[in-house]
Image 1 (cartoon, rainbow, N blue to C red):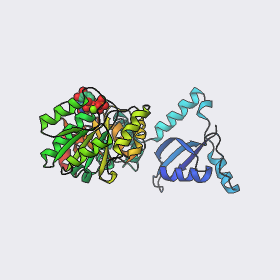
Image 2: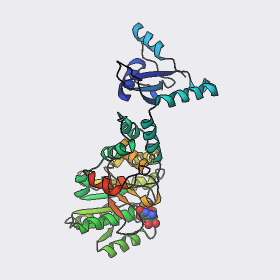
Image 3: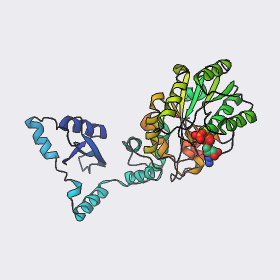
Image 4: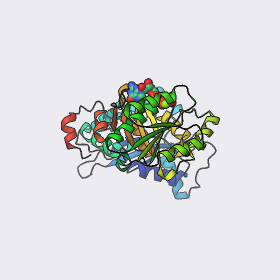
Length: 362
Ligand SMILES: Nc1nc2c(ncn2[C@@H]2O[C@H](COP(=O)(O)OP(=O)(O)OP(=O)(O)O)[C@@H](O)[C@H]2O)c(=O)[nH]1
Ligand SMILES: [Mg+2]
């Protein structure tokens, strides 16, 4: 396979240039940000170098003669598989030298927190060279993490908890229902999980303890009647069964049940464990894509060291996190998502949380 190196003033500029030169099918395999050396009369400038290739079977864009020259000049990157060990080391050493200390530190901090592209790329964009990244990045992370305060404060009439088995849907739903009840909203719970033994009893026990009414609905008719009984409530929380994407029959059942709800009045909340890898979260999202999840509940913060994977997922999908949960206790172990919770869960930044919290704007 042929690899091409393209340099631009920024990542976007390099990608656009690559597309212009080689066609829109180009795939990017790596990027490197660096600052030109500068000199007596030369300003230091930031550059982004990307290495890309065309997947087999895609035709390279037809180049004009002028493009061809540029193409030849730029297409100097060897196939990494053909490099000797010494050549690879050489390349890496060269790259190490080019990267500034602060960029290196910033990359390590993001890696430590499992923050991945495209969020990590955005965070590193135009990073000031004269400032310690551990003071610049936390603020950027908070700002770039999608949020939806309107949805958090005034949820839609139906809030449906979706997510993989055991991710914490039922417990989080009970905690959230209590949170809004305490804030003065009239809340109720309907469970669609009538298949699993003990599922209704579990949510019913939470409802009884929190004084929130619970109904179960095993078919469309029962769901309709339950929503009518609770129509005077402000928020109706709907619990679902964890469904494997492979279980087509159960997926169809869930789909036809949820079709009863008025979509415009429904917020589908995807519940994911904080320790879930980003790729697995993407897979979960694609299996629930038909419902267009509008928000995330991130559970089990207490069981993980870092939250970068879920922040990266939220950024990549533009789905805001509404809740974090941090323990098994119902209803206590829940936090509304906020800059503060994000900051508390970043590691290696050496943050003095108290003074930092007082500085942030949200
Ligand atoms: N440590 C910890 N455990 C949690 C948290 N949230 C939920 N759990 C536990 O995770 C387990 C599964 O929680 P459930 O709420 O039953 O999960 P679910 O998604 O409803 O599971 P299914 O209905 O079987 O799909 C229970 O033991 C919960 O106590 C959390 O924030 N931290
Ligand atoms: Mg459940």
